[in-house]
Image (cartoon, rainbow, N blue to C red):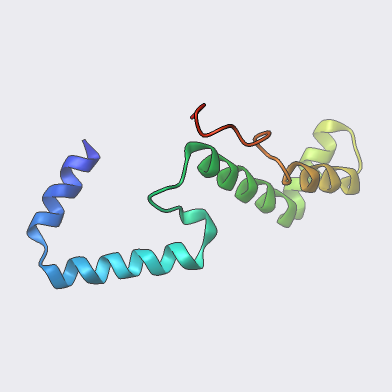
Length: 99
């Protein structure tokens, strides 16, 4: 349904507006890793989401303190565990055929 509305929107826009929007999108995709691109797989998207979430938790002391209290661990141990989880947040990369 979203794609249908987007295609209708693209038909209304002029060629110059389409070029401008596409160039802005390409700029964002090259600047920020998590924005994805046309060839982003579900796995890559999930990895980006998990890493962004973990990075946010590590960056906010109150979230780390909350997790430390909930797990009865030290704040340093929770930070270490979160940073270790960032290496492979969704497990190993699946084969292309499995997706």
